[in-house]
Figure (spheres, rainbow, N blue to C red):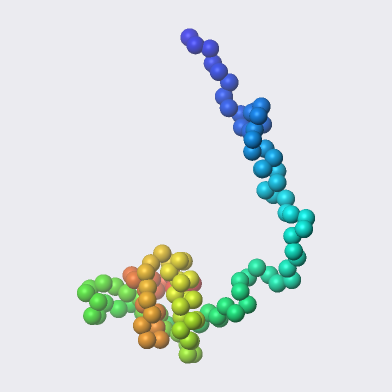
Length: 116
């Protein structure tokens, strides 16, 4: 039988590890980093998210495809609807568009829209 060879035991086992210094510096913050008084929540002029009033499914006039129509309370402007649609499409993994003052999402997403 052939003699067993040592298995690789990780980075500590390597004699010459070119990434050893890099892995130590990744966790450390730079000493001259500017201190921000604001939290990293996003830009200050980001539009507020509108409040969902109702979500219903519809098939009429859509070639038999099921869509979810989301209506909002109040009168949200185009920027608020666009921001909400972008967030919903990313969270739900579906396509969507804005029609009139409602958001139209592809598929039956009524349960997930409520939790969103």
